[in-house]
Image 1 (cartoon, helix red, strand yellow):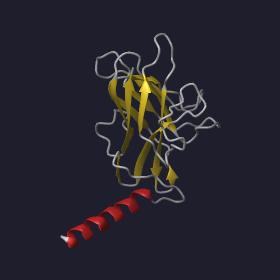
Image 2 (cartoon, rainbow, N blue to C red; image 1 turned 90 degrees about the horizontal axis):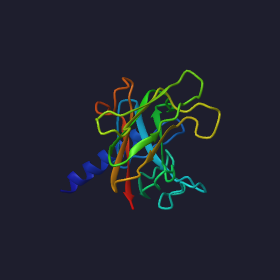
Image 3 (cartoon, rainbow, N blue to C red; image 1 turned 180 degrees about the vertical axis):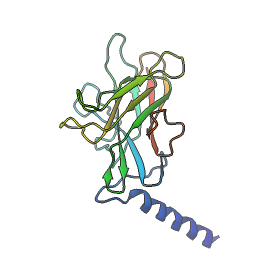
Length: 197
């Protein structure tokens, strides 16, 4: 019994070292991320401190390196765009943040309300789409991380909203070089929003 526990603890330590070590950058393993090979993902809820969309129950220090992945948010008011939840994310490689094709994929209630272009008029692209026939936008694919020379650069950004149905929205962020969604990705991270009236 003691040997089994010791072996399990040693395995967990080695996994934590493998997942968190980069050149001066750390990403934290919390059971909501998966990784394979030289890349891993970290997705988090931006607390939007001081903004109309501020999420009081989200850690004010939430970031790719200290991810808060759970939020309780009220449904947005009819006819408005208030109470967007800002889902930001990073891809990491052995040398720090990695710039590659990535996707946010939503399931459950709610929708992806914005999928911003990573570089405005530059060559990078963003595609917001509806993939399951329910009329709600559920996939945001971006060709790279934000690179506009502003706050938020080297991260990926999506906005989530819900105006009608209380319940749970799960959003998976993944490395998606084929730009075909997260189903076949082995580098991903998830957040959860509990939408309430």
